Amino acid sequence: MDQLLKPVDQTIIHADLRKINFLAKLLLMRYIFLLFSSLLFLRAHAQSDPWTGVWKMNLKRTNQSDLQFQIQIGKPEQGLLYPAVITIQDRVFTGVYEMLLVRKSEYQLGIGRSKYPLKETPFKLGIWLWYLNGTLDMKDNQISVNRLFIDQADFWMRGLYDDDEIFVVPKVMLRDFLYRNKITLTKSANKAFPDSSAGRILHPETSKLYFGIYDRIESKQDNITIRLADNERYDKDTVTLLQNGRAIFTKEQITDANRVQNLRLDTGRNLFLFFADNYGNIQPNTGNLQTTIDGKDYEFSFGNRYNAYATFIVADIYHHPSKEPAPDTMVNNRVTTPVASFTVNTADIILELRDTEIQDGDSISLRFNGQWIAKGFPVKKAIQEIPVKLKKGENRLLFVADNLGSIPPNTAELRIRYGNQVKTLALSTDLAKNNEIILMLD
Image (cartoon, rainbow, N blue to C red; front, side, top):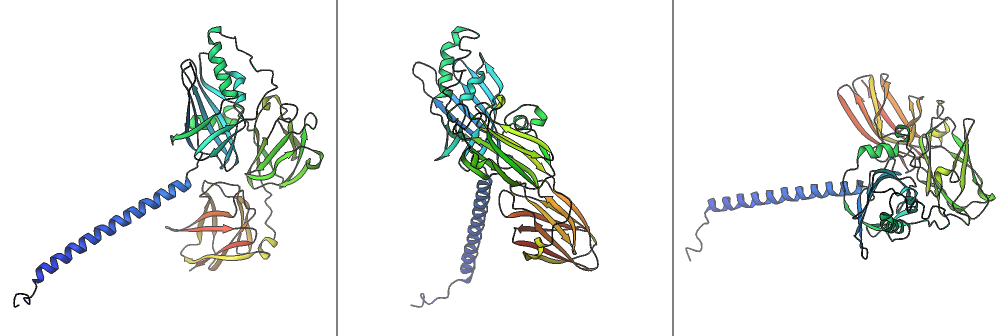
C-alpha cells in the first residue's frame, strides 16, 4: 500500500511533457505545410486555363500504321485568342502547322482556317487542311472536333496525283481523316508553348501572316454602327458575333431584321469575333460585317477568298476615348464606397494601376480633389503610373468606372508609392458604385 502512495518522479513527468509538446509542434508544422501546399495548388489550378496544354489521340487503322494527331494550345491573349500548333504523323507523312483558335464559349473554341506549315514531308496537304474546321468542343476532360462539313467544294481530291503516285494511298487516308474521321483528344501534358509561334499567330503586324485576325483599326469614336449583310443572297447563312467575349447576337440567320446595330466600344482593345455557324444552302457562308470608323469604311467578310470556308474572322478595333472629363452624373448618380484612409509623409505620390486578372477592356476615370486628372484610362496587365501632388491636409481620390470590360465588375490593383513606402489596394467599381481613397498629408 505504501508503494502505491509513493510520490511520482517529477523528472519523468517533465520529460514526458517535453516529448508531448515537441510532437504537438511537429504535427502543427506539418498541418500548416499541408494547408499552405493545398492553397498553392488550388490557386494554381484556379488560375490555369483548361484549354492550355498538349492534347493527343492515336488512330488505329486497318492495314495501315497508326496515325498520331496532336494539338498544343498556348495561353490565351485577352482570354480569347489561343495560339496552337497541330502535328499529324504516321509512317509516311509528318506535318506540323501553326493555327489560331478563338473562344466562342466556355466549352468551345473556333478552329482557324489558316494552317501555316512549319514542317511537311514528303508531300503537302495544302487546302485539304480546310476540312479541319468548325469548333473544338470540351466535355468530360476531352476535346472533340465538331466540323462544318464541306460537301460542295471543288478541291475535294485536287492534288491527289501530284508529286508521285506512290503517295496516293497515304494521301487518301489523310484526306479522309481530316474530312470525316471522329477526332477526340485527351490532355497529356502542360508543356510550354513556343514564343515564336505565339508571336506569329497572335500579332499579324509582326509576321505578315494571316491566321484570321485583321490588322488593328484605331478608333476615336465611342460608338460604331455595324451592318450585317450576305454577300450573295439570303440562303440561311447563320452567324454569331461577340465583342470582347460578350454576345452581340448568337446563331442569327442573316435577314433584313438584324442588319443594323449600334455598339459602344470599350476603352482600349475591342476584339469582335465573327463566327460562321453554318454554310447555309449555298456553300460557303458569305456573311459580311460592315462598319464605318472615323469616316473610313471597313468590312469583314466570309465572302472574301482569304476567308472561304473559315469558321471565324477577328476584327481588332482599339478605342482611344476623348480626353474630356467624365460627366458629374457618373459621380452623383452612384454610391461612393470608401476603400482606405491613411496618412502619408510626402506631397509627391505615384499611383500604379494594373489588372491582375484577365485584361478585359476595363477603363476608369480619376477625380482628384474635385478635378478630373484622368479620363478613359485603360487598365492593363502592365503597370501604368499616374503622378499626383497632394495638398496639405485631406486629399480625396475618386475612381469611376467608365465601363465593365468583358468580365464585370471593373477591377484593378492600385499601388500608392509615397517616399519609401508602398500601399496596395484592390479597387472594384461598376456603373452603380465608385471607390474613394482619402490621403492625409502632414
